[in-house]
Image 1: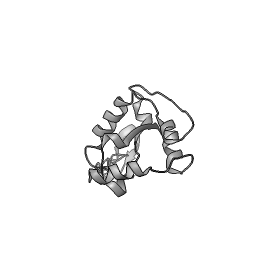
Image 2: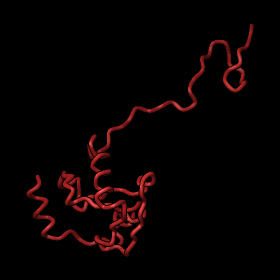
Image 3: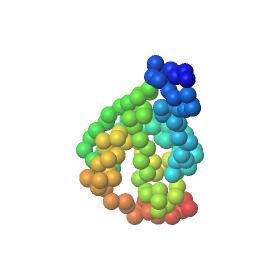
Length: 124
């Protein structure tokens, strides 16, 4: 019986077929919807690829990540998406990853104003 050599010279049994070492997973849908990547990209461009976390009450960051490094920035919903279900650009802001983690850890974040709540009710 002849033993075949697989990729990179490793011996493979005659009955086994070559399997990819990293099987690709099917793409998962983003919880914010299929168009979230384009919305997020437009918000980053609008904000000139700069972290605007100081507008939410965090210390001034001002990090700027121009393309091809814009993936280090994230679009943040000022009004909770789970509650208001809106991607209105008025209520989205660009923040860097570090500031985004601080916001969601509730460090330094400002409470939502009544004006923002009223405006969000009209979006529905």
